[in-house]
Image 1 (spheres, rainbow, N blue to C red):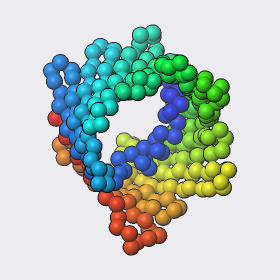
Image 2 (cartoon, one colour):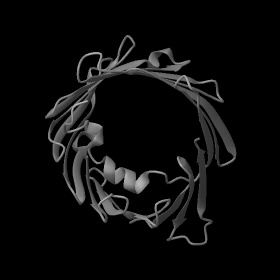
Image 3 (spheres, helix red, strand yellow):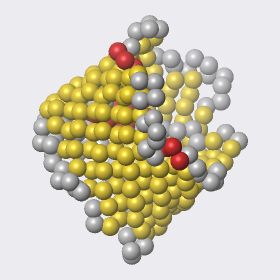
Length: 276
């Protein structure tokens, strides 16, 4: 793929990953194995509250094609096929979730040095259509997206955004929810490898006059251990410890506290991912 401005979904992603990625209050265990034929198998179990769920997934790569197949404990089947460069500088993604036969969708992504374009359409009689585009460079990106429901003949969403990236920082502004929400985020890197960073996100919803501020950071203790923390203006404090037990095998311990109600029991999460 050509190196260009990236997809619209990438705008604001760095701050979102810093403040939300790997945080959780569930108990999760997954193990992955790989065959000589290029097939990856993953089995995962999740305990959320008093309920337990699980799934088994298989990933097969061949040349420019990737087939992802997943089955969960409720007999839901998810199939995703990704094809790269069927047409130069494009990626095509076809997905289907069974038993919902109307969930089929095809997405085509086009990449250029100074622009990207994505279109996704549902495979049913009254499909939903999503369009997004970006222009710019890897340093500064302008983008917009829109969703249209052919059944109602109405737009379901329209969003605009801009991001600016420098060697030691990243910032973005997104106007979402048909102009009702503005989201401003910033990330500052503390080292050249970008393993430690601080950042924050401010969200304002105009219709309800509601503001949310979230600030946090990620700090590399050593080559194998990362500590993260975040706090929002509603008093929710999150903390996370992630340690690489062996190459590609990671243990994550996370917790969430309500600083305005310390009598409540903190919520704890545990995740163990084993990969050979």
